[in-house]
Amino acid sequence: LTADHDLVIAHCLAHDEPWPSGRVVATSLLTERLELALAADHPLVSRSTLTAADVADEEWVSVREGYPLAGVLDHLAAHVGRPLKVTHRINEFSVAAQVVRTGAAVTILPRVTGSPLAVDGLVLRPLADLALERHVDALARPDALAYSGVRIVLAALRRVAAETERTQRAPAS
Image 1 (cartoon, rainbow, N blue to C red):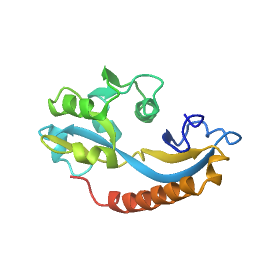
Image 2 (tube, helix red, strand yellow):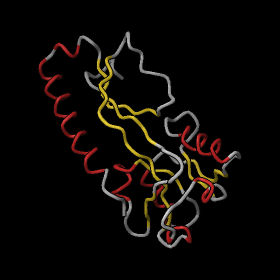
Image 3 (cartoon, rainbow, N blue to C red):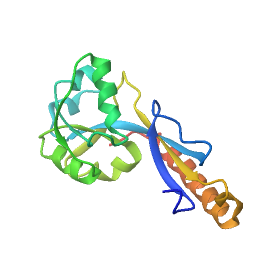
Image 4 (cartoon, rainbow, N blue to C red):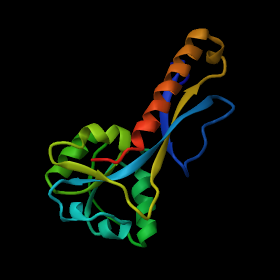
């Protein structure tokens, strides 16, 4: 995408391969927590703390294989020592949230992106024993950063990202 666009917003997990430093300049924008999304009437909602073991036997919504967040459930499965039961593969957060609202499954959603979806029967909860997060970066070709307009937009993205990180520290609903 950086061949066609001056700036690209991209995300990756902590254990993913680094961006190709010879071809792009990566500017870290924010680290976003990933949280468990479950139906508001799910029995686990009443618990003050949730662990990976608490949710390991649930049915799960995951993204399709090869998408950046697919590795999150692999990480969770490794943590609990057994595979998870993935019953749905959906790449759109709002559609996954709708499946979760029905009580058919649980999923992992990014805290900032998922917070607007945490209404009408869906809640977000962190897992107490497993730090899940994604890194959101701005990618640019080195030559694109020579343009003042690109630098201005990148500075604005950094300001918005800094404010977003401050707001995500507040507890989820």
